[in-house]
Image (spheres, rainbow, N blue to C red):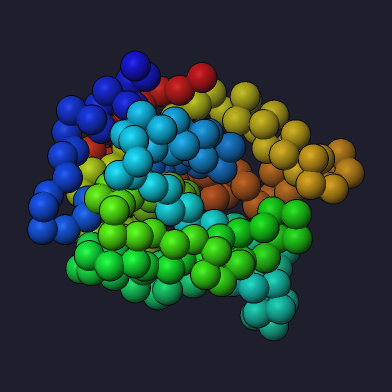
Length: 203
């Protein structure tokens, strides 16, 4: 059993009255998606993942706002929509819809995720779950438990470059994006370290 699974299963038990929301935060490239998927697999059929990525603003909106070239920064997400979805998951026993995200075209997909009444634990994964500005400070109080993943910075940067290459950037553009966009975002994530319930070092 991984340290993440062991920690969450020992601290989070589903409450009969409402769903529990468990947050997995981390810098870009820290392995949040993989860790969240492994956690849900360990928790079983009563658990599901809600990635924050689905709340990216659409490309056209980012272009209109002049923010397309730093997509992934806190103000390039629909934080109000994210908060509303988390609140609905906590307050409703019924089905809640949420957007997914298509990395191939870098666009949110409305209604791609459906979290039904059988889901009692929602594993929320994203960069800014512990951020304390721009509206993101409303996220942490909605999460029952939060874990921040940390990873060797050099490995994290290599993973990010590989990801950008896989989705079509050339090597120079991939390295430039990591340096100018991903790294400032990673510094913001690190500032939330003290607000996590647990910090886990991952490989």
